[in-house]
Image 1 (cartoon, rainbow over the protein chains, first blue to last red):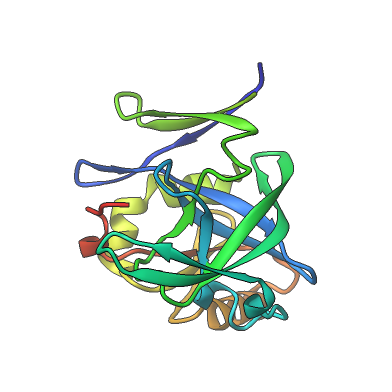
Image 2: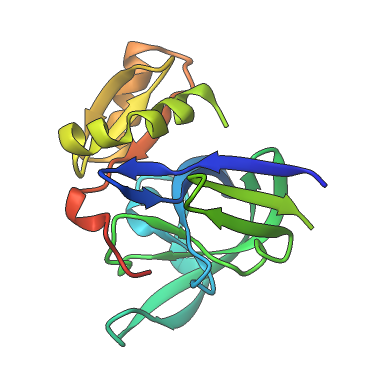
Length: 131
Length: 69
């Protein structure tokens, strides 16, 4: 079984599963860092990451997604391709102006169906096993 | 994973301390630009090293690192 390992980013004992991915927008590729979040239904990218690109994220299907304080934020979903390691797969990717954190989020839809994702805080790495 | 992303991970703590909340461009394991937007940093990187494929990263702020997602 093939797999890809990503070491955690670490800040003063805080271990963070951030990985680089490439998102294929209609007119260009976007390489960004995402926080691997098994608790997130969708992958959501901050609108700031694409605001200067030739990509109107608001043409996507709008969905209201509930966040940690119970409120709902608008997310615009697109069918794109994402590359994790050397594996490129189709995936639903959301974009939002209201993702009030500094991380982009890698969620479960279309990603966790292709990969079995394992978090090892002991070994300080995230491993993506191809299913 | 590219050597530049491995460099970012290896230097993550220093980056958070020095570049908190800023975008940085890393090329050949060196920070070649930093600024407040992806576009600004990408343009600075291209000016310095035309044709380079630098890795652009938004360095999170320290207060963001303990989070509930």
